[in-house]
Length: 280
Image (cartoon, rainbow, N blue to C red; front, side):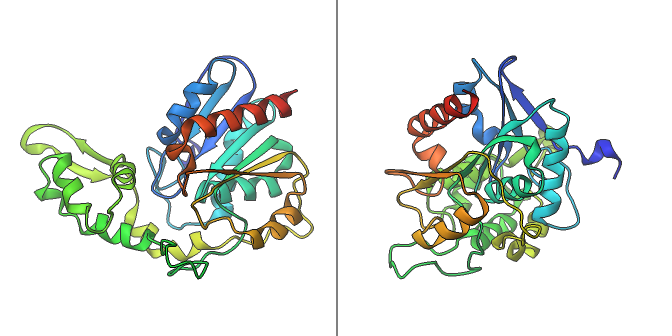
């Protein structure tokens, strides 16, 4: 790839103020943050990135957190000063890796419903019978099994995914990456997600690569968890504090893993208050 081909797709809202950069989770894209970004854009420059193999960004030949962190770091390095970096789920792991490797690029860090630990490939993290087992492999299988040539409308795709993805919110989220190109007989549907690669390397996304020896990020960190999610557990606190000693944990009621989609007003207010403090 040339340098230009390696550049991540970015969209910026707002024209003045401190910079805030958002990175999405697995199956997402920068546009997932649009509602939150609009809420901040009156007094911030808010950049929404598409991670590799998602959205409009390039596809790669492997999934690797350090590689993704370096690509995001390259974007931040060109921004002219430290930024507040916000990452959800997979994007939160990317953001943490970046903070530990390039702390000079960040003013502050926001980690949304993820911890710097390894997650199970299947099954849950607790004995809670209501905990949702890791669904991502099933989501990929359902998206890959969808016969795109037989899909006439988005409703067709929605119906075909319903058994594997019973949540209307999650199906809507996944289908943001299903796009139609062209019109008439020549038009067809395609996924903007590199599903084959994500399926192959899903195990890599469960992990959290060892940071450089002795690495810590000493800047302010806001750790947001959904009260109904099992992605952040009490036993994760020690590792978080070891790597990010200035961490403040906020748990959002009536929210699961997609905190910013399930409780957008609370999420936005929480981010606003944090930004006011760190921008001083």
